[in-house]
Image 1 (tube, rainbow, N blue to C red):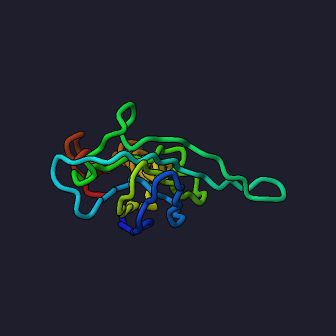
Image 2: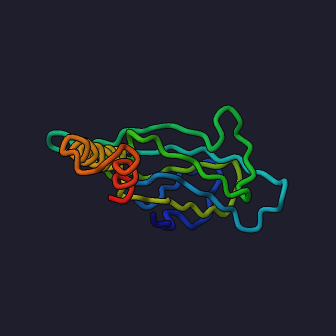
Image 3: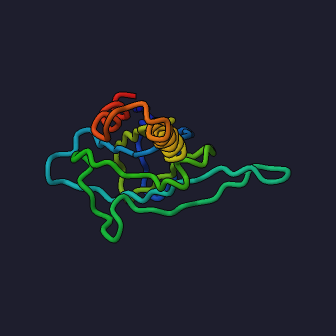
Length: 153
């Protein structure tokens, strides 16, 4: 996993600011320098997915708020916001748009990973097949030995 800064700037009231684009983002992390414990700001956010279609790149918006159903958020708590798996594993380029009701300094980070559920399932399938082969070939004296050996592979 890798953490990268995708936005480091000042949000102005009633203006939309875009982050840098990224792929394979798993989580978003936000920081407001100078925000004291217990203080909060209101920030709206959308995730924009760039999808190639015939003749152009279409941008599709996934509207979000930093906390669903509650727009006030203490950004200094370093909460992680998961990006939906369907977007994370699409391989498409993504960026965030931010809007605020007040002037606020914001740093946004993305945590990325190239590990997908598909690759994990493939690895698990391979391990299961190896275990089946061991059982079928009866290379071990008892079930305990088979299980111990399968864990070591």
